[in-house]
Picture 1 (cartoon, rainbow, N blue to C red):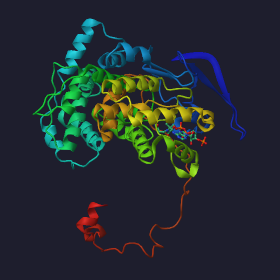
Picture 2 (cartoon, rainbow, N blue to C red):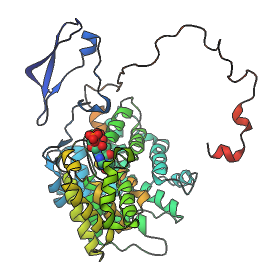
Picture 3 (cartoon, protein in one colour):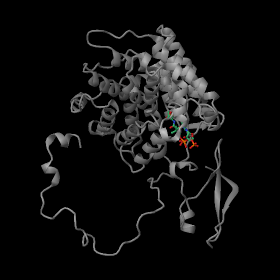
Picture 4 (cartoon, rainbow, N blue to C red):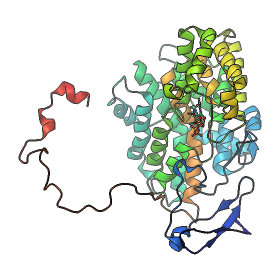
Length: 459
Ligand code: ACO
């Protein structure tokens, strides 16, 4: 970190002596004030729920300028990567810091594509899930379960083992996602094919059956590959911070990434594209374009709890550069499939236009995010809505694992342990239980034992 001569002086009105705190400069972006000694010197914590003003780490991987609408992977503009590179090149860049040359690209592609098969026993593990389980629930289990199958990559202090696990995660994630999908629709799992590209192979595992081969369509492969690139990393977002926090305890990479998948599932994060498509379908079912004004009125009514999904972002307060690329891809895919007049696409474009001119959204700096159009693209590609977050997780795995590696090798790495402002009861006096009059009488059998099987299943 680049220390500056600048210092922040923090003074207190309660008699605590003022202290000076060091300021560090990033290469770009806001300076940070180092508060690590604050508690030691003043006995006070900082309070920042949601990390609105807190840098949790230093990182060289991804940079976002929310005001400019800029996203850089290792210094490269997302627009340039999305138009000139494929997903595996972006993976190499995120993991290793540089784009590969031709030889490095070939070696990396070969390495990944020769590790796409998963342990056969994982199929039996998969069969323990209910078929109607949400695929993200299944994927979370499968990713975490990898730690039970790949024991030779669990030592986080061994650089070679870490690399082996990173490649395994990138290579096997498409296989696991496709397995979760095939299981949910009752079709046999399709094995990976090494002669296909990473993304074409994923599509064949999703859409081929033993009775019918998948015909690779380069426009559609390119579209999904772009979705992967756009979702590959995004600085210290909720799921990445989850991976870092989980990983900071020294747990194995599979457990840390499983935590990331679980976090991504939420509708405010990776679940947004699923929620966005559901929102568009609902507006369409209730009258389509004609009903947009009614919907927008509901969004503005704070009591309704309705949000315009696919709009707004914690960091982008001008535009999300990924959204523009996604809209372009959406158009290309629909054209390729002869779906230019797709009513949901038209509805989304009209909704975007209306929202972008509306004072409510303008004043709050709410713009379409990457998820506004990605659901329409994925639906056109034949990916069911419940799978959207799995696709996102597949793409984000490289970001998670690159950030995890950066953390493990950071000399300042410590277990993450936030503190709190305690607002509960102070020490209570009296003997616990002495005044209880209506608790469970001692000697009663376990109350759950008398619950019928049916009601137990719904617990
Ligand atoms: N629709 C309507 N109003 C919104 C929306 C939205 N999508 N997003 C934010 N607002 C409003 C809030 O109500 C709030 O208004 P107020 O100032 O009158 O109270 C203001 O804008 C600020 O919103 P916050 O929720 O405080 O902003 P925050 O940075 O915490 O939230 C978030 C960001 C979670 C992404 C939010 O914009 C949202 O819920 N969007 C919809 C879900 C979504 O698309 N998520 C995907 C994010 S991208 C990704 O994960 C890949």
